[in-house]
Image (cartoon, rainbow, N blue to C red; front, side, top):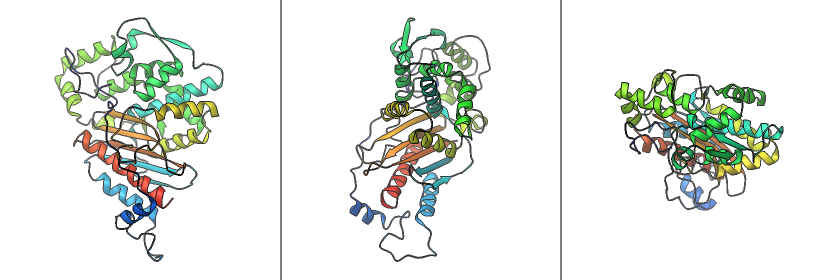
Length: 364
């Protein structure tokens, strides 16, 4: 879906729940030697590896946490971070226990639930699913490219559209196939993931974000009517003005730690079968959104299996990053309540991802 204000509708632009693809030149890969030299004087590695051990000095992980806090000050919103090496047992967290709106990052849990049903033989990747025109939600993909009735897609193609393009229509079709939001939350609990819950599909998340009450009609009809009745909603969409009650709502929310738990369980093969894990992470590696977020400052060619989320003042990106030696770390970065705009939100995410990358590359 194009972000709010990027596309003019006949009456009003429809709200976005993710950011469209942008391109950005990546930083060249630093060699270990040059990276150490560069970082030795940075706030993150102020007591570089060449310094004599100092029992009283902050350890590297504490300095990483402090660096996250410093970078978060670029925004006037609240930033949540959780990072952990895939084969490690310690994590670094900023604003632990704080909940953030999932926005489109909830689509990871939906996808994993679908794959769990495939593993049980309840669904098949090549199973064809009809797309009801009544549930179409504005976004890249189905709504834009197939505007006429008569669309059927395989589960595999729906998963591809949901995770790589953040297609909202594909998401709502898949949420229904997963058994509904409550079934996705139940799957998370069975997996042992607490602190994250799914309460709605994309249409209903957007309705709550803009305080649109329940009612009849398609998504497009309800948004059009709501914006016509209250033009301030249109302005809120275009400006990205925060909705504090929505940002603090426990529904459709997660803590950074809960998302990290989900990512690590997927990577470890504890969430779904080996074949499903490979397919799910493969799709996430093809994500076309958020090039200026987690991937924004990482070395060119870095493999990142991730999912973004965008809605008004909210900017998220979560995923698994592969280091040059083939090892990985999981990272979840959430921003809510920011009034400075997309550029600042994305810079915060990119800076935090780069700090984490350098930490795991040099310190481990």
